[in-house]
Length: 310
Ligand code: NAP
Image (cartoon, rainbow, N blue to C red):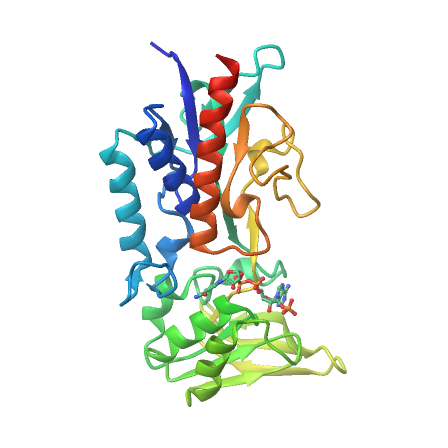
């Protein structure tokens, strides 16, 4: 029977699994709808060195697998489907959640923890070379570029991380950045500056990807004087930020101009009973540990809310 659930959690990154763990331990019998590929962005990372409790670091996928097992140990049920829509009953304040296989779930509360996905440059030639030289994930695709020349675009921690990872495989790594300074943390910048395989191209953006069946070069344009140059590369890894995964709730919930869910007191959306946690809300910190903390807060608020409506 499709009974009404206490809580449904959408998303399977640190925020989702932490919310699942807390609500499961509170006997709320959560269902977590994980998406087709569970685990979120940390599945695309290599070593995670800044999640407390792992003095030697831990691989991103291993950390996510641990979180999943911990939630399941307390009875959380995981459904590996994508949510395409949430319908909200304004009278009862309950939610109907519809997945891409047309399964429906009814809930008194929902925690949205769908995170954010990698941003692309959105230039015309990009589409042609997606998967043929242009990627957003070095840990996924880096192995194809052993002893080759690659470029990373961006100046944040992700760009530093990708460049450092690629320097272990590729013969040469360029970092192409649109300004003359990185926003990445000092420790990551220092590692990049010390790495002999990495060369930084400041004040440039990619205007065009060129090649035949595969990528051969990029056309760069100076952000200072608009001069164009061509750079031979076998692969380009974009690390230029993220877009929140909120398309399925844009008509329902208040979102900001970038699409992040707007919350009050961190986890309350504008619909009573619907909470949001992690990177789908947070464009400031975006860390695994802050997402996990946010998932915990949402779970605790769900508990309080359920008591209040009893
Ligand atoms: P980010 O900090 O938002 O950096 C995005 C970078 O891409 C910026 O340097 C930005 O340039 C550049 N950029 C954005 N749009 C662009 C465009 N259209 N063309 C060219 N360049 C563009 O994103 P992130 O590096 O993914 O990091 C996100 C968060 O995760 C941060 O809080 C970061 O600290 C965290 N993170 C932490 C770690 C770690 O600690 N190990 C690893 C990865 C990520 P401008 O600088 O000019 O804006």
